[in-house]
Image 1 (spheres, helix red, strand yellow):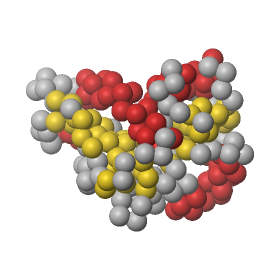
Image 2: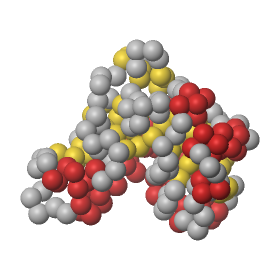
Image 3: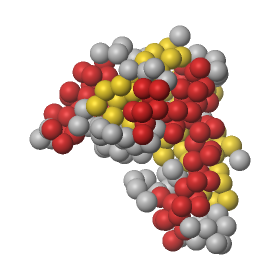
Length: 212
């Protein structure tokens, strides 16, 4: 059974979806720690309720990203993870951190990458008049939101939608696809190679495996 460490900055709904999937034996793994860069967030409470060890490492106590990530790396490694999952972790990681966990670290991003890297993705989709929006799970590399995409879920955009409407529609898909990709990695069906993300030995396309 693989050891999973989850990094969060907020409510931890994706973390909870992964914990639930582990407890239901839908993931061949166990969440052994939840780490946040912010204290007093809902995700830490959810983890504590599930009996999962938690830790807080505040970025405000460090003078640079490099210094913070160096300490974060030590903290994560203290739990001996096989898989590291970013679940709403609102930090831009240094190249050294990304390299250390290359092929073992996943992120979820609320857009159909490569569209809308960064923040405010739902409003940007509305502003551009997009008819479709969605969410992507990808391997973490040195490039922000630029690692190989593994799986996407597409949602419709309706004329009357607000950013909050889109956010809620996307969230429901996040909780569906993230545990699935974590299971693929834990079961070693999913691998990161020089060519890109591979599932069951087949190279995935630029937008991963799209699910409607």
